[in-house]
Image (tube, rainbow, N blue to C red; front, side, top):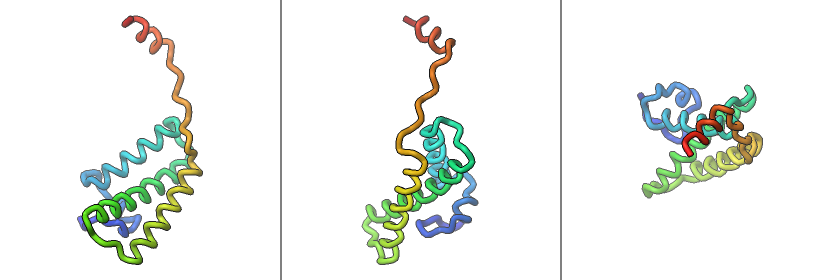
Length: 116
């Protein structure tokens, strides 16, 4: 499998088979965002979650390269700023405040009080 970088195509990122650290990170981001939205996102939220996950992965890859001392080209700098701005706008559309957690069920309350 070719090495994944910040400029890898969305198709290449979608083909990740789950064994790479990038694929695991994409899944982790998606899971965290779904939980942030209350667990069951709508279809439009799912689309935004997928886009956010890919943008965040791209930015994290570029951050890692910068921390390793790899200088950013002018192209990389422009792409980084564009992706960071797009990520910010998408996160705003998803909602910065998470959904309220599900209220505890009667069984949860009874289980919690039983232990005390």
